[in-house]
Image 1 (tube, rainbow, N blue to C red):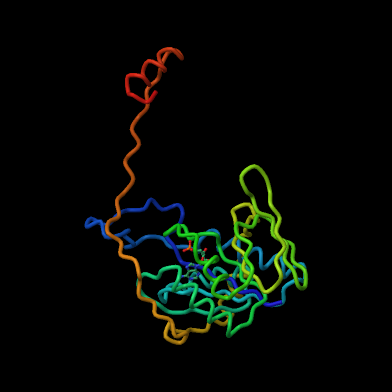
Image 2 (cartoon, rainbow, N blue to C red; image 1 turned 180 degrees about the horizontal axis):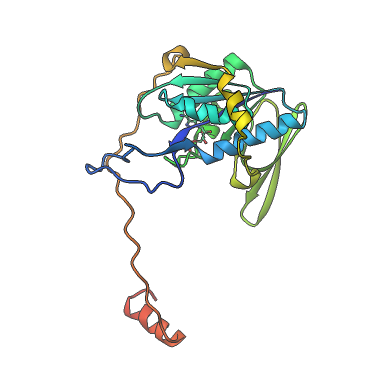
Length: 248
Ligand code: AMP
């Protein structure tokens, strides 16, 4: 079974994000970039399924600038077999990404696509759902557990108040939640091996997709700084303060 894993290059989750002075977006100069954490979980899951003998080949795909090669090398070091870089400079919205991924699926014919549930830069949480709709494939979003059979996938999802298990007929689209697994650290030999694994370069035009954004960002602002709290001596004082501030 072939599995496709889309991986996005995003600002590293440890970096404190700076908003540009003109409020047009986030400042990316000299900022550490990494693989989107949910996508790392997706690659790990594909590798675990391969280790169980359920998957034969893992293809990582990234749509982004030339530097997204590094993101693909990370996926290859975790255990993906080969990679596709669809080169694109500038912003891309989930619909354009989903359309490109649909064309990649038509060319590669995977039985399963495992994406992250969301990219931590734009927090859209849309691409997997849009891809499933465009392909007409079933989807299991926010997977916390995955059982793969030859024709079916069973996905356990965390929902309010418990767990929900859905059965999907393959081919299908799955998106990963945080609890699905804990990705391994790529070992040095695997990092070295990853350097020799193939990365094919493509362009957005190769897939006949118009990447122009349909939304206009009006303004990006940093969240308000957290104000310091105050200590109260008793429950009665707390109630008094809340009344004073019109909260109750
Ligand atoms: P989003 O809908 O933007 O929150 O992204 C959800 C998931 O779609 C990510 O976790 C990735 O698996 C995939 N994805 C989004 N953008 C890209 C991209 N430019 N290249 C590869 N995969 C992407």
